[in-house]
Amino acid sequence: MIEQITARMPTTDEVKKLGMPKSTSVLDVYAAVRDPGGHPLAVLAVVLPGDRLELEDAYPID
Image 1 (cartoon, rainbow, N blue to C red):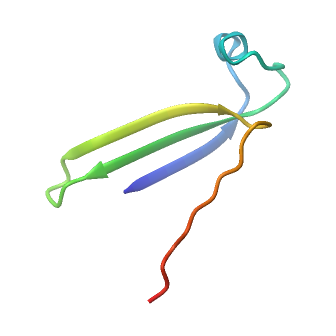
Image 2 (spheres, rainbow, N blue to C red; image 1 turned 180 degrees about the vertical axis):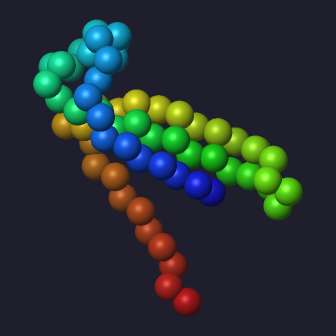
């Protein structure tokens, strides 16, 4: 899975839909799961208000 997370300022439409101040940044999250041939199996694109979330990742160490 590939995941990209970018912080940016919200668009006017996002401010309205998320009910947030225009001065609060958002996180733009894109994730894709591909098969061994590189073909997409699942794609997620979501915009999250930066002041209302916490991200957590866990990585196994071998």
